[in-house]
Length: 124
Image 1 (tube, helix red, strand yellow):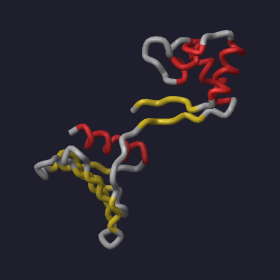
Image 2 (cartoon, rainbow, N blue to C red):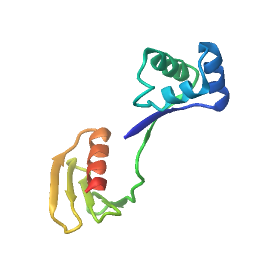
Image 3 (tube, rainbow, N blue to C red):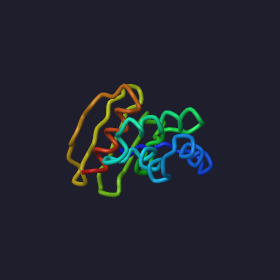
Image 4 (spheres, helix red, strand yellow):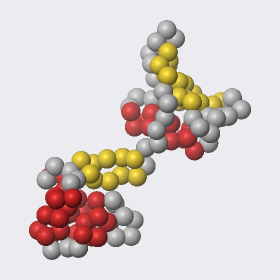
């Protein structure tokens, strides 16, 4: 998952001026750039951006979701043919590949664990 901090162009400009850095450096910091976004300066830029109303975001692929309320299930078919099935009452998640073979059978407790299962299914 790629993460970034969403903030207005006006605020980016203000941060650049306040910390005396280039607009490129502000962008590297806000996009958590692997090469240039891990310095102490980048951390200060991110902290200031969040303080000034920036929002930490995660990029995720879009998934179609079908909620079968009668069966108490959530089903997500993926473009690659994989399918994720979650039983609401138990938190049990099964991931099937495009051949219908079970690839993963897990119990989840958090949204983050569901997101990880979705990313796994999307990558099959």
